[in-house]
Image (cartoon, rainbow, N blue to C red; front, side, top):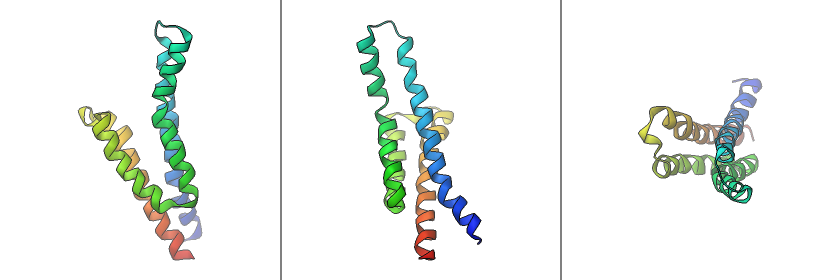
Length: 118
């Protein structure tokens, strides 16, 4: 496998995580359409941003420890499935749970590539 393919495989899960973080963050913006005082809207926004904050922390961890990020991503996909009930809709399941699981698998694979090249 060429070095270019290795670089693409290492960056793919990171880019997917960034896209997922943007997706969660955009979904959090719907709180500002509600009829409520601004302070309540900001509080609701921060609560809805908790999954994004978790994914940001996981992405920061992935830069140095892709193996642990892969494990955490796979566990997080199960948590998303159960906690957010993404199994109720195939589209939600694919967009959230499967994407997170794929990121985890790709992190584990990229860790194997990094370990192999060292």
